[in-house]
Amino acid sequence: MAENRTLFDVAEGIQVDVARVLKVLGDPNRIKIIELLRDGEHCQCDIIPFIGQSQPTVSRHLRMLEENGVLVSRKDGVKVIYRIADPSVLRIVDLAASLA
Image (tube, rainbow, N blue to C red; front, side):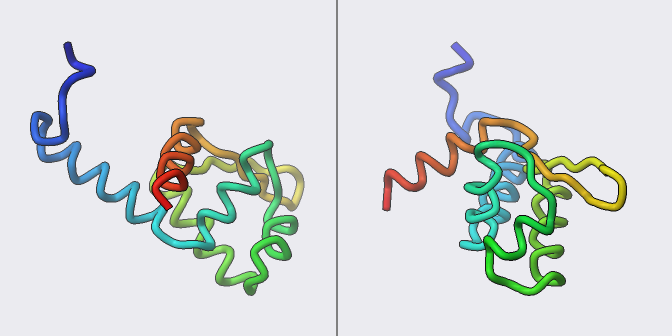
């Protein structure tokens, strides 16, 4: 019956992890990045114009998403290609959108 558990029933460490993921997703620019990556991989050169922010700002957002396990990256020559690490993040974004 593990599927019936709530956050009150799980270890505090998991609650902290959930709060961390929700916090990193709590920025409109990072949600835009997730939406762009919904359909597949993109390099930072695609993400910058889509977000409409400076390269250092986009780099900071990408780093935060990657450090918190939302994105993964790989090198392709001089480019860094990003993708969503786990499709579950899309369900989180979709559920949040349904509340708006």
